[in-house]
Length: 180
Image (cartoon, rainbow, N blue to C red; front, side):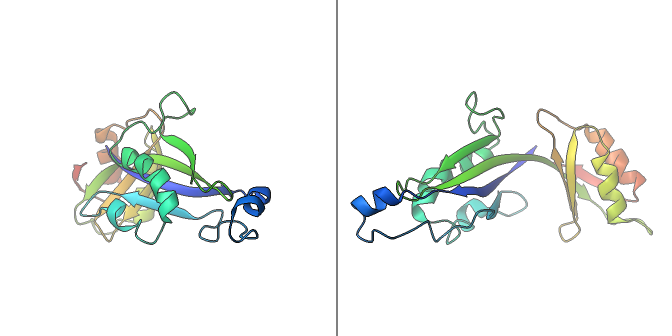
């Protein structure tokens, strides 16, 4: 099983009374760095390691200090917050700016990589996507023709059978080189 981490900005708060009482610029306003709905995906597979590269400039230092430990845990396949949230693959966290905090939803995305060989004549990636998504335990699939693989994201507490993934690929005109 492989793991990615999805970080989404879900809210921004403002405490103007604190800004007026404590800041050099009492009208600083909300955090200018993030927008609600911003999403960053971190991954470590196939030569990619965006934990070390995507954060450069993608997150402010205060926020990165607060959320990077959860991202790293997710990328290693660990429980982000066992017993605290209703899904141990997810955490709600915020930066430590006390006058204008940004709220993040951090999610571990579990997936299998179905490495594909040269497709047969008439093979169709949209048909492959649908066939993989029909396998029990699969939440959704992304076909990466640029990498010659499919990423099969799994439902919570699921582990789709490799044989079923191979059969789905074969029925769609693809041969499987392996599953990671």
